[in-house]
Amino acid sequence: MIDEDAAAVNSEFLMIMNAVEAYDVYKSMQGTRGLINLVSFRGARFPCTVGIVVDLDRKDGEFLSKIDDGLVSDDDFYFIGGALDDFTGALAEPLVELCATGSATSSNPFDPEVVIGARGARASAASGSTGACSRAVYRKQGERLVRSEPRGLVPVALGADARYGPDLPIFERVVELSVLNALCEVFEGGSRNFLGLPANMRRAGGDIDASRYSGYLDFKDMLHVRVHAAVQKFVDVHRDGFVYDNVMRLVRGFALAAEVGRLPCATDRLPQILEAGPLDADAKTRQFEIEIIKITSSLD
Image (cartoon, rainbow, N blue to C red; front, side, top):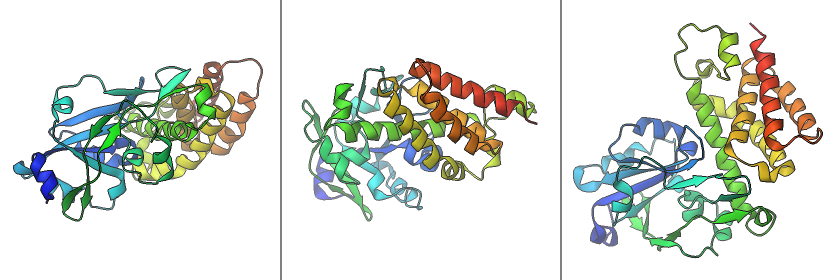
């Protein structure tokens, strides 16, 4: 199950994955022993990146096969072995918080795409990081965990100016994760039992009806490309206004519009609001959300 180098460390590992990129896997693991929130967006109700303690001596090795159902690829997760006390304690707060302010954000130091270079290019953008905590990273290879070279896990602080420079790929990755995080959160919110609440009242509260979709992937397939393009337009106009609350307002607006067949309306309206007058980023995303809520809650 593990190679000799891994066995020499111990039998306990922390499997790390982005819950926002493996929603169904994450949901199936809720309640699992040692599920830890590693990275969140400020104010989010859904975690971005999580760790799950896997103890191979406890037969948790069977857990490895549970993630081979086509829901997540081997490039979307990795394992850290040894010295897990830093991670396995009861953590009320995430270790890293993204989009903490409008003027600076951080990379996600645990992001599999960066740590194991799942898609290559963005990993190199983070290679200049300093002050990293070096960890031995293991990747799943068949039924074994194979050790790769130690990797540094450290958030990269991005000031407003740096977002236009060589660190831009890291910033774009955080934007991408924020969109996925908001999609997960909106879907989760719409999965509650509304106990017969009229649709217009539910929509007035900003909640979708997730039961209209066959599952999260169906919801994501409908909205992801359109929403990501909308958020990117927003960031291009108000880069310093990139905070999670603003992303949530945009995603919520598009999700509500999709529910009533008004996605083209939302797509056309957002650029008009972004180009309007002296309003700041928060005011524009609020206006967009309020307009969409007004339209959708007026429909039966």
